[in-house]
Image (cartoon, rainbow, N blue to C red; front, side, top):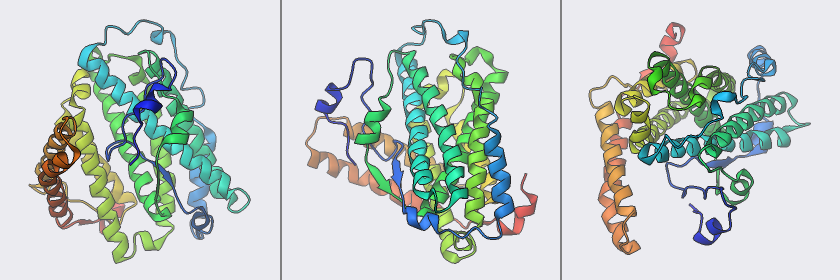
Amino acid sequence: MVSTSSAEAASLRPGIKAPAQETLLTPRFYTTDFDAVAQMDLSGHEDEIESVLAELRADYNRYHFVRNAEFDQCWDSIDGETRQAFIDFLERSCTSEFSGFLLFKELSRKLKGRNPVLSEAFALLARDEARHAGFLNKAMADFGLSLDLGYLTKNRTYTFFPPEWVIYTVYLSEKIGYWRYILIYRHLEQHPEHRIYPLFKYFESWCQDENRHGDFFKVLLRSQPKLWNTLGGRLWARFFLLTVFVTHTLTVLERATFYESIGLDPDQFNKDVIRNTNETARRAFPCILNTDHPTFFLRLNTCAIANQHLAEIASTQRPAVIKLIQKLPWMAVIIWQMLCLYLIPSVNAEQSRETVR
């Protein structure tokens, strides 16, 4: 991964936050095989595609992302660790939404004239992601910082994913985003004393964008039998569920201060998000993970603890070789725990698809 150098960071304008160093936990920017996407066979799923497109065209949140008078105040009352944790949350969320915007915008551009239906769909997805990123960036500005999104476009590392991987990961990203937003919203509805900033009031309608985006990728996934009706599809489904859940666990527990600042228990929040996302994945994936297995969350937490040790080692001033040697045992812990989690027998989603909520 390429990280922002000191020289590059120094060249940014005052008030522009230097991008966080790229790690396995920072949101990635993606590119894919646009020709392969253009040639995707969607036959037999035209009605579902049109239904999802109708929802996207309706643009229910056209007038939702408008800042009101509640934002017009000084936010110095949010300070110390809480302030830094909240800025980190805003930056990660903004970067993730902007990453989606760039991918969807490029897909729409590349498919124009070749696959008009998908081109329109990706343009509508890009519209929503741009709104989300812009709204989050304005929120960061309330704390004296913002991201230079043009700078990110040119300087972030782009990771190539085959279309199949994009479909798996974006579906899960949108659905886990839905559950993150809606669970935070419901919690703060019950405990308004913890609503430290008005952004959270926007989450109920906002998360429906995430839900609609996920539904679009569900149709794409189900339109490609090789993604769900083959042994390879079942193995990849388990792999992407696991990697998304491990990443979520590491991220939530690494940023526990933020969740505690809004009155959430980070560990319980992580479990609730994962269980709900896993259950939702029944609608699309051929199998889901057994989150009720007695060692499932214990192993996820072990990964999180190992990741904290890795972060502590990385923050020292020791020589790079020494740090690598010190990291290896903790990296082995994470790999071993992920392997054990992957080998837990999965739940056949095809047999229970009709019972999904």
